[in-house]
Image (cartoon, rainbow, N blue to C red; front, side, top):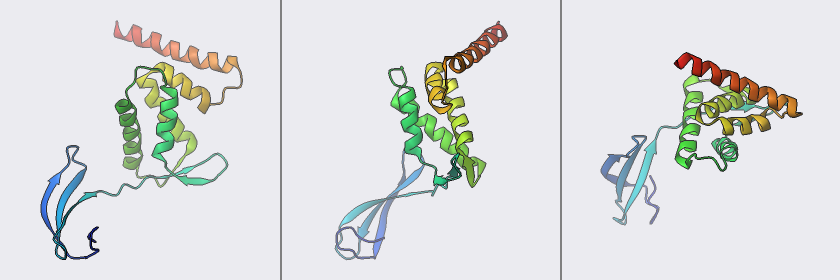
Length: 159
């Protein structure tokens, strides 16, 4: 590890601690050249699948794109930023657990929609309307009717 002050390669670890979330190790180091201290973080390298677009292009999974779409869908809804970030973290974790090297954009969209459906039905419908590119009001109404039927089933099941 190169010292950020003098560029010396030799240093020693003087303290190691796990972060609150338990996902990283924080290390305090002391440079053996200039004796200044600095902090480094160590974490597991996460490997996400490539997303295969409708036109066949492949691009790396982009967490920022997912959070952007979810933010738009959740706009003016009572959903905290922490909840949205946790939703995206859960989706990313699900992809990593699958160990798939590729995922279709369509499948990724379905995963996001399912997560939003459980979180907030209005956000789900907003996301679905953009993702599924409803051509007219009939397609939109069909989606809403399906949602209502599921709600009715849940209510009857709970009784």
